Image (cartoon, rainbow, N blue to C red):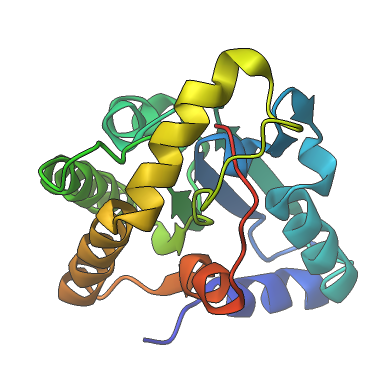
Length: 205
C-alpha cells in the first residue's frame, strides 16, 4: 500500500508557502515516550526523536510537526480512550502506534483484548484522515540478572521473562500482525528484528 506521507513532506519541502504543514503523531507507551532503562528517560534519543531528526534532515524546508503521545506504563485500552485528545486533535497526516509490552497478560486470553483495542485505535485514526503504521515493540527479557535489576523489580522481571520464554508475548504480537493484515495496516516489525538477533535486554515501561 502506497503511503502519502513522504509525498506530503516533499511537497511542503519544495513549496513552503503554499503546501500544508505536515503532522506526524506517535501513540504508545514508554518505548514511544523515549525511556531506555528503568528511571532513564531521553525522548530526544528515542525512536520518535531520531525519526524526527532524520525527516528534518531529508526535508529541511518542510514544516513538520511531531506529536509524541507516548506515556510510560500505558496500554492499548487506555490509548483508545485518549487517542482523540492526544493525537486526533492535532489532525495528524500519519500516526505511528506502538503497544504491546504493557498489554501482555500472563495468559493468551489477553491478546484478544489487546487487538480489539488496537482495532479501535486504527479505525478512529483512519476516520479522521490519518494514515496509520503499527510498530511492534521490542521483546521482553529472556533471563534475570539480579546484578543490574533493582531489588524491588526482581519479581516483575521474572514475570516478563516467563511470558517471553513461554511464548505468551509471541502470541500477542502475532495476533496484532494478523489484525494489521486484515485491516491493511503497514507494520514496522521491530519485534521480528529483536527476536532474530536474540536481544535479551529487559525493557521496563
